[in-house]
Length: 196
Image (cartoon, rainbow, N blue to C red; front, side, top):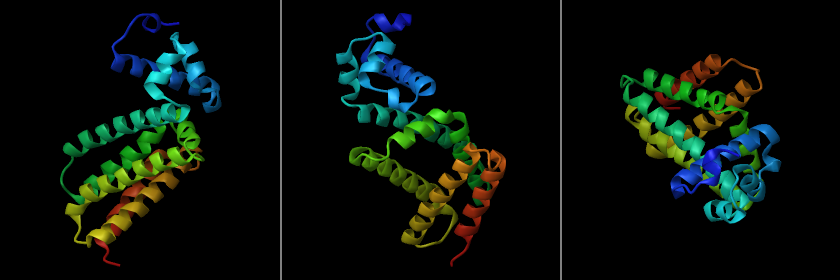
């Protein structure tokens, strides 16, 4: 039990501590072991504290996924701010960030994503995140093409689908991270410069 477990922490700090412990549980024991009761035990707090923060196991899984996702999006936005405003450069940075997200967040992130499937509330949450990615890609890539809005949106959906498939290949060792990022970047450039 850590020192921060037993002492009274501000709500936001306690939430972060609980999420850190939850990642440890997933890493060491898998997502099946991640319950609010087990989290309370591992974090050295009472069960009502975990229920107050997450309400349900689904709420905990969604909070874990959302935290990792928010960190990755923030890093991508920072990288884009430092990038030349050329489609090739933006595509390269976006692609590298997508692949890096999977390798740096570790297998825990993939396990959490898999655990989000199969429950209506969690499926809706996951779809909402994918929709946010599509919106982000559309806003970011829109200035570099003259496609109609709906055509650009559909290509962004397809780009994210391709990114997901490539990142799964990276995780299972079927392709190197750099190769997957280059493939995705070339796909983005070719789809945004083609009118077909």
